[in-house]
Image (cartoon, rainbow over all chains, first blue to last red; front, side):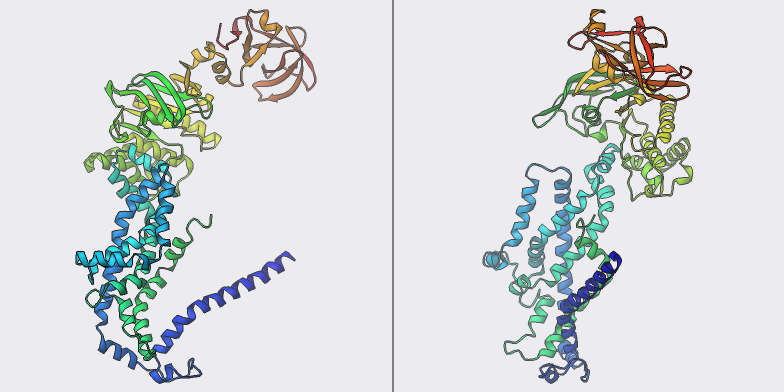
Length: 276
Length: 332
């Protein structure tokens, strides 16, 4: 009896997982499909799903009209730079909170997380003014710094959880073996936390890649990443759906492929500590 | 050289004082065991010596030089942890080599020392494995190997055998004793197991609630315990404590008799009792005897002494082996 019930439950679980998965994936699939349609088919009513004449004309048009490579390069620099800078700051921070906690460590962690609860637009004005004063507007450096700051709480929080899992005795052993603080972090802590650091890096790279609010508001032409590239194809009248879709597909393709190949790391990163 | 001197050393965590100011002298080459029930501060004391905890007050000298504020790395001490604390991402060779790498020793000398340690500890065939692929006993050996290659001034052991099974524990105990004889280096060893303390130590330090109760050789502690706590803690099975009439007769508040110092007889003796559970080990028999007005006494009888559950037997303490304690629990 019990077996029959669990079998039934398994089928229900699997089916609902697929339904939810497809539901989430559908907009992406639709965008990709639309990118291969003509502008006319793209807005056809009723919508066409698969039986249309496939075309690459949107891609050619988009590539002709804008410099995709430059946007892509900006995205890589901004997402990569902010992630690396974030890690350099977060590793020592997470180290100290995980291994030499003070009475206030928990409060600090919560306080850092609470900064994520503030609507970004609330600080747009002051940051915009600061950027003007410092000459950082439409610069990659400015975006690297801002995105790093935005994601820093998550990076620190994730690394903190990973570091907490490393037994303190191993670090003490390193200290007894004559390792300085730097050597302890470089030779023992970091290699042991590599899986955690890798998934943190990945997740933050994706978050920074997809970040649109700051990238759209603080860039114009020079430092604009792929999010701005997409935005440049959206028009208020809602025309040129197919070209917009082609641009979107090109913008998400690199990160989608990266995510696909590192699924395992990502999932372990997101569910770390949840199970066990 | 590896003498360690503790002067008025104390440690508090917040309001709680875990080590009350204490003095202790550990001589070069000595095997010193800190023993006591859990929570007595023995591990904390070891960590203070290691430098992994800061002193609240007092001073620590290593080889006559003040080491109170030295970081662990500069105290020339090696430590073996209860959990072994091996570096899981490194091979056995790299684990053992790590302290030498930190000391920036040249490769040839390092290789020589690693090979030497591996040979002594029977690890030669396992040098390229990762700790995860080793058994508990082998991991313990790697931890010891990592400690000995540095040729430290002293070794610190924090309950190193408590994760091993009984048979292996006896083996490793012998190996560590052997190592001490070969290296002739100071060893400080923490355990809650009084058998380990008795068998391994040159000098035992009995700790209780952050105080040193007594310091002495195993036999001193066994023969002349300073108070009831030490008397009860050292020796296995535990000492019997008797109060009341039998104690008053001997001008004491409490008398203590070890199970091996009670003579048993089927005919006559000071106390008459009923045999409860008896444990036959072959060579010895441990009896739990209920004595009216005295309580249950543990008795160690010879294996040839035959009794059954419920038999009536007689017990007499050996007069010269009786320990007498006053009302404060101190030996008279």
